[in-house]
Amino acid sequence: MLVVNPFFTYRYYLLQSRVAVGNKPGGFEVARGDRRFYFGNQALQNSSQAVMDDLDRLSQPGERLLVGPADLSRTIYSDAAFYYMFPELTPATFFIEMDPGLADQEGSRLADDVASADWLILTNFWTGWYEPNASSEFGSDAPNQVVADQFCLVGNYENALVLLYQRCEVGDGISPPASASAPNAAPTSNANWPSAPRKADGDRVPAVAGHRRTPLARDTDPGAQHPNRKRQF
Image 1 (tube, rainbow, N blue to C red):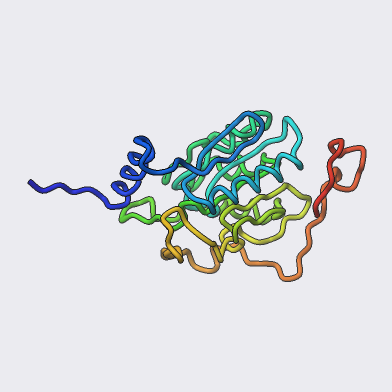
Image 2 (cartoon, helix red, strand yellow; image 1 turned 90 degrees about the vertical axis):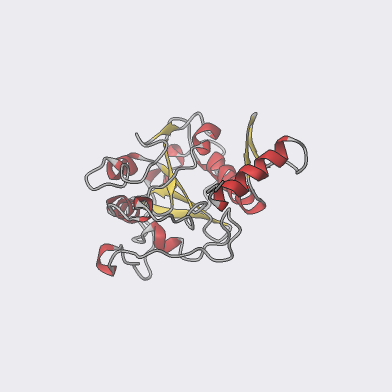
């Protein structure tokens, strides 16, 4: 009898089975108030807890949050747990659980969803995962362009494992994949993430040398700021 079982899937099934029977310690916990979630390794825990702590301090109830992969032209997943951890923030996208060929297709509403957000949490948790199918293909770069034009990077955790963006008057001019060009660790424990064929340079957003962000009114108007907030910029 021949059994074909992808090693990637088998390894994580075996890991979770060992955790379930007490043969191996459980996941790495992150917490906010009475809400808990568990990640698979220390780097994911550290970066996730750090971005949650910062977003907790900087955001206001009712603001809009979008969570997605660091390269929004390849929407193979979304770490939707961050929505659960921030119930007072409004999800800014129809694509809560992003899928390749849908959220990243040309003409999708994802770019408009990004433009509607106040905050972005973009992650590289699965950037190194490539399969021989359409999920490895790049779709529309329009959402990355919106980030470059309208958002400023305010937090970089575990060497770009997680990126936190805030809407600002003039964006940094840098596409999120460029901000994440030197990631630290993937959940597969690979030292270096494999790279896939990318679009031509002309399809990517160039970095703007020496660019500084123009703050929003609430960054400079004390009356517009959340009470007890200390700006970190």
